[in-house]
Image 1 (cartoon, one colour):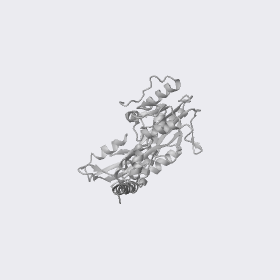
Image 2 (image 1 turned 120 degrees about the horizontal axis):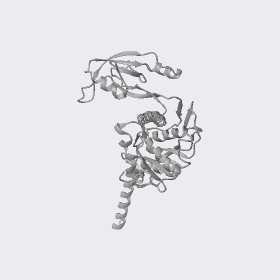
Image 3 (image 1 turned 30 degrees about the horizontal axis):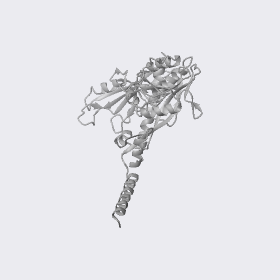
Image 4 (image 1 turned 90 degrees about the horizontal axis):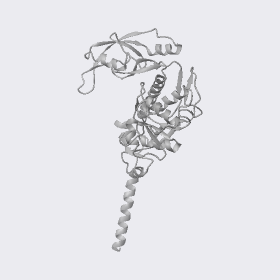
Length: 365
């Protein structure tokens, strides 16, 4: 066989081998891409996204779109060819698998966690919107979770309202841990609670709960390495009662990043006039009960999704501005927001057409 022919054959075989390796050898990466974007002022799957009853609402116009990111599943095995294609593609982002599924999380575990975060974000969105409107919201500290195998198991339950610990009134979730850790492991701590069932019944009947219980729990030592604190095995959270019914209907979405846009949608429906002035505004960001906007993941994918849908302005958490500004889709203005009040101020400028002084994102912000 002539040397030239042999060289070409060897090169061809090597190329085939490399292609086979690229196709069949998995790599530890996952892919993010632009996901659906939904107008919080509109309908989804045939029903309004934001449903309010027991309070006067007003017509709205324009868009206040929440945005999402699609991700590959936890058990999907990306190959080298797909990874390279993703790195080169403008609308996709390849990231280490552990970024999306840390600590070996299964897809079911990740989905459950996202669902819980989504539910909490809805509650905080309602609270933030009503506080911005000076509408009173009742709040109390609850047992959020009970860790299996700890002293609290079987004695406290998720949804129990914590009124006091050792007779000291509890006002914030952090008060619970502070009061428990005043004890040494092995000492008793007394919880005064309203059982979850009593609380639920009182809310349904719109009355003050009448049944309280005192639960004594013997503390244990924290299982964290080097941590000798006393624990009972619960995490505390906050629950709320609203003066009218607010329901957010949006299936197949997880995570906390729609909080800001839900808040703004509720604010718009509860106030006369149009918050957007008919403009197409999209955005993202977590929100807490006080109206503070927090950063989210996948910001580049969300701006692409928003612009493809037709958005002109994108409300961007301040901590995401620098990343988002590196590659802004043409025709989209990134507006920097740190609180719900920032967002409302920006929407006022957008509505009036006075956008010259909008707090825009930069690569340094």
